[in-house]
Image (cartoon, rainbow, N blue to C red):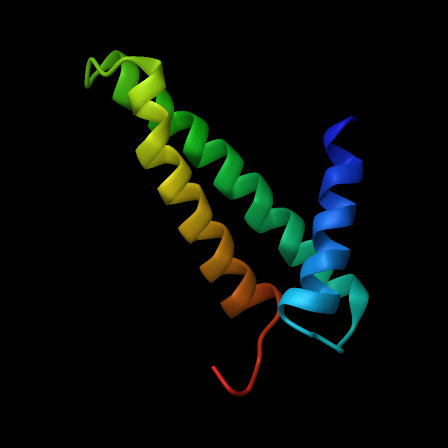
Length: 87
């Protein structure tokens, strides 16, 4: 429940300012949420693997997970949620 306002704010901010996207709200929001859920889930899985299988301390394991989730979010949002003809 507490994640919902964050997703709504991030969607509005990215749609309006970061990507300046002017198309339909419903489709892009649905795809945005799917990308967010995928990134969150796969990032959590990667973190678990790095800690349990890789033997990394959590403080160090989070660094590649941040890089992964940031990349997945940016590319997913740019390519799928807020398609832009220039890119």
